[in-house]
Image 1 (cartoon, one colour):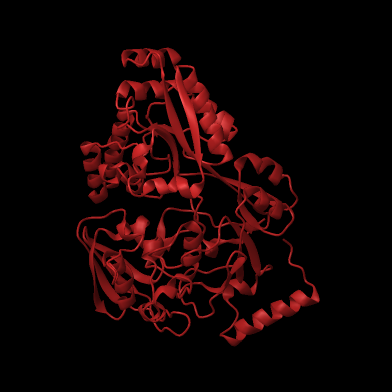
Image 2 (tube, helix red, strand yellow):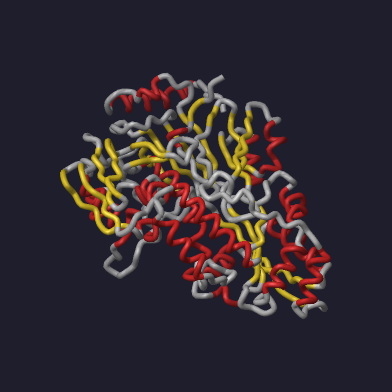
Length: 520
């Protein structure tokens, strides 16, 4: 989008600049910017702006822009940098000392950011509310014992056990954002829609289902300098609609289907970026349901289904194959994981050995959508060749994900699943533990050794040792033949040539503060 210097826009821009000057001067990062705003497409509207109860990446990306943490992720990296903290020291395996920067202030007159706000913000995760209900992301701080305030700007985070994942899963992430205790006490449940922070942006406007507007916070005193005066977010659910909006110039940045990258890149003033994702897509049986309780049947399915054909037919040959749980960019990536080639003779022999030579009927449950339906149809055709008749059950999103509640997954037979990844391997392994049966472990696989490895990985500080632990855990997943991996996904984005997006390696999270003008 070219900045249109009509009289109307100049008047609006002048008013904005005048306002900033009146509030303390033009922000240094904004003073020489040729463009003052960008319009980004988000795939759904904001939902809950309380960091402890956020609904997903769209909420989180806005929360990150408005609220500070002790630390925050570096642009384009899984590494972190100091934010509200002037100092952060891991004193021991179970103690982290912090010292806040002075002069940090919450918006709307809620005063200085202090160590008491840090204590309140973090301990919320381990203290149920008056109704006895825990926050949505309570698990992120499960290792926390308490936060001790040792001065107005200083304190100690005391853990019940070592927690090496704490930096990426909590402190730098949404669960590490610092909430104003005064604002929380005053606003109560309105904290979900009224975002108070001390960060680089303020949430200037939120018109549900229409747009949100982030604007530079003139009173911000932290180290992370935003570039654009305004970030405007437009919720557009349909990918095709978003791509049309991009082509027409209505938006400057959007996630796209990688398959459409070539045609979009041919557009004037358009740039397309691809980033390998850290998600995990797989399908597998409920191993409590006969005949899937026989490992030979599970192994037969793994040999019968052509994963490479799925990648060609449902992913246009653009997406990388997954052979294990953890993506290549993550600690614990198992580079030597076996890639099972299709072998119908082995599949038929295993079914015969299991007493299933005549085949059987089963149901494959998927979330409705063109790609999932394409995957399901390939699985259906592949399994038909070994005598397994598959009925495809496509559920709308709400009904599909409701299977994670109240043990609803117990009646599943085969299911196709996609989870979003995070930067620590323990986030991924947690969903396959025995405790998750009845919730998100839809294969209902239980293995005490895997559970123990997951727990051990969560408290092991040495990265090399952690990596070995997670590889051993993945070997157990592989031995079970209950999880047939498809892909780690691929993220693709279209943006104006003059725009450099601030996308983190998982693709789902964006640092609006890191969106800048591209250099030639």
